Image (cartoon, rainbow, N blue to C red; front, side, top):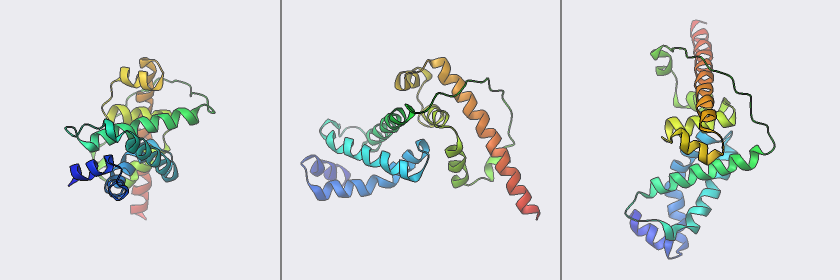
Amino acid sequence: MEKHLIQEAKNGDRKSIELLYKQFYGYAMSVALRYSNSREEACEIINDSFIKAFDKLGNYDPQNSFKGWLRRILINTSIDYYRKNSKHTAMMDIEKADTETLEADIIDRLSAEDILGILRELPEILRIIFNMYEIEGYSHNEISEQLGIPSSTSRTYLARAKKKLREKIQELNQIKNEGAIR
């Protein structure tokens, strides 16, 4: 069914394009939310991504996963969105991050919504690098090329992101524990 839908969309069938959009919208939202500051930004990234995907549908190789192909477009569009909007903000100072350990049960008590909220609280560059490295599997060299930063900066920002995530998780856990006590 999916391959037929893609083929029809390649041929310009508007109904197939609409169905493809609806079928992959939820997945696209899950990817875009990890890279954006808000739902509105995520929607902008999604719409731009689908426009690019439908414009380049002729380049899609049916031997590969459509979802994977779309994911790559979403990530690249998120990075483009960041670049476009980061011109007005200065890069943050780099500080060395020390490592701390978290109790495993803290993370077990968090919902997916809690974790997504914590990710959104990270400064944009930290969130993007964390997502690209930890979730999408990019190497520091690939991140460096995509964002136009040295790979050492990517490593430092990743360490900083992890430190901030640990702090935020501990804060949220403390809040949850205080709420349970009362």
